[in-house]
Amino acid sequence: MKKSLIILAALFLVFLILNPFVTVPAGHRAVLFSLSGGTQNRQLGEGVHFVFPFLQSAIFYDVRSQTYTMSARSWEGEVKGDDSLTALTSDGQALQVELSVRFHPDPNRVARLHQRVGPDYANKIIRPAARSQTRVAFAEYPVSVAYSEKREVIEKRIADGLRQSLGQNDLILDEVLLRDITFSPAYAKAVEAKQIAQQNSQRMNYVLQRAQIQKQITVLNAEGDARSIQLRGQAIKQNTRVIEYEYARKIAPNVSAIITDGRSNLPFTAPKP
Image 1 (tube, rainbow, N blue to C red):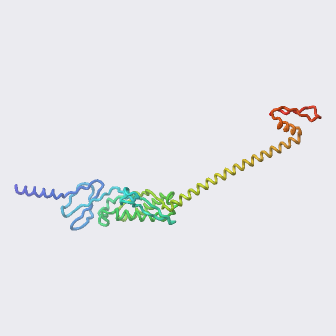
Image 2 (tube, one colour; image 1 turned 90 degrees about the vertical axis):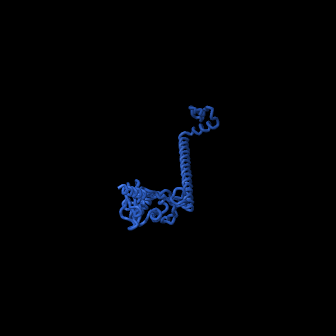
Image 3 (cartoon, rainbow, N blue to C red; image 1 turned 180 degrees about the vertical axis):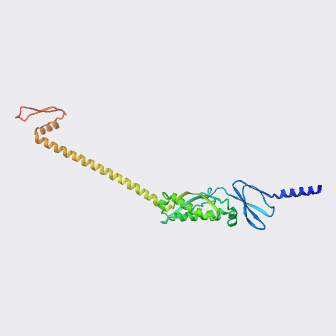
């Protein structure tokens, strides 16, 4: 009896040393690989599970949301160095695009993902599919709208194509983010030159408008002078003594003068201005 207990204790100890239990952490799934049958269809959810030592092994997959970034800045992307991609617009302009893809493995299809793709799904599926769909989307629009009003439309176009591509490989797309879009140096210079030309045109329009306004003011002044002369002429016609008043005012503007025509008994007094 005592010998049997020792044997059982020894077997239990060996059992523990072989560690027949696997713990699947939160946000993960485990795929079972059997030496006799290969990848098994049954996958393990969160918690503790029993496996046969030596005969079965568990491969863990993170099914939480992940982000794959392609950036021109070496410290931001998955690949060190400039990992942005070049996309051509419908009018042949080259754009440098930085992109982030948020996704997660389908928790219900991890076993098939492991069998068909494997753990390196980011480089095998995410990266090439994202670069391909981005180029296809930008090729549908000219550069003049791709950078501004069609940016959200292009982002959605990339997401729609990528969602289908990833779904075929047991991956689920969460979001596509267009991080940055940069013109080629040649096109950037052309845009800058166009902006300068527009500013110069606006400045010339302003100068022309001011000249037109000044011309209108000059015409109005001239019309006012002409009307004044006309009114003076009419006044002189009606009363010739107005000429005498004007003459007296010019020769002695600060002196009151009495002017008479020699025939009238009523004097004409020029008031001080």
